[in-house]
Image (cartoon, rainbow, N blue to C red; front, side):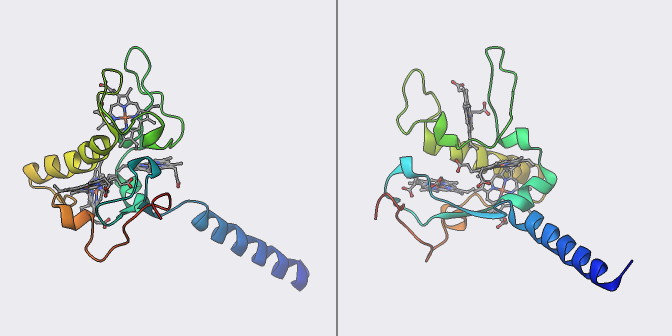
Amino acid sequence: MPKLKILVLMSVMALLAAGAAWSQDEVMTLDTKDLGPHQRPLVVFNHEAHSQNIECQTCHHDYDEYLNNNFEDGAPCAKCHRPRATAQNRVPLRLAFHRECKGCHSALMERGTPAGPVMCGQCHLRGGKKKTAAGN
Ligand code: HEC
Ligand code: HEC
Ligand code: HEC
Ligand code: HEC
């Protein structure tokens, strides 16, 4: 193969590799607008690290009438969980986050396996950014 073709091929491959790494939000700063101006510093969540050992369906769900989880995409939790609890919205938004995140961490902790944090200030890191964009 001529040298130039190899070089072009190599740069295309480098671009593809970079694209794959950037196409996902590896580390996300959670800033749900529906929660209004935040009282606590924003939570930094390493989506990539969590996804390596935990199945998507453990965190993402779209239940049908038989409570089967028909997960297809990573819809925002706020799409279904609304801020205020009602009969139709039994798991309000803030609780949905806390029950999912802290629930898993404390269950793992009780089993004595490596777990994530359960204290407020370990997720809502002091000195972190507050307010949502909507609250600015
Ligand atoms: C430990 C829990 C957890 C696991 C495991 C997980 N996710 Fe997520 N994911 C989240 C949370 C929390 C959000 C943010 C939701 C929000 O902002 O309302 C999110 C957001 C997303 C988004 C949307 C936004 C974005 O910025 O990228 C997609 C798509 C997604 N996840 C797909 C996946 C897929 C595919 C997997 C499995 C390979 C997966 N997730 C595994 C918790 C998880
Ligand atoms: C497509 C709609 C939908 C989305 C998106 C969604 N949920 Fe749910 N979630 C539900 C429904 C419906 C229930 C069952 C509510 C009930 O028991 O009344 C539920 C229940 C829960 C529960 C209770 C325990 C369980 O797993 O059944 C938690 C915790 C929870 N959701 C957290 C989250 C989090 C965190 C996200 C975002 C990563 C999310 N949900 C995204 C619809 C959704
Ligand atoms: C199904 C279990 C599970 C769920 C759900 C989960 N985590 Fe974790 N989390 C873990 C495990 C396991 C670790 C890694 C512990 C270790 O290896 O030290 C971890 C580590 C962490 C850490 C410390 C390391 C880091 O990545 O900075 C933070 C912060 C964290 N999780 C935040 C969250 C948040 C926020 C959510 C909800 C959006 C969440 N976790 C949901 C299991 C979970
Ligand atoms: C395992 C991680 C974790 C722990 C521990 C945790 N939170 Fe949260 N909290 C979250 C996540 C994730 C959200 C949703 C953030 C978003 O999407 O904007 C949230 C949202 C909130 C909100 C609504 C947004 C705001 O800032 O006004 C409040 C208030 C809050 N948490 C207070 C607390 C308090 C108080 C504690 C300790 C009792 C605590 N949290 C412990 C992860 C955590």
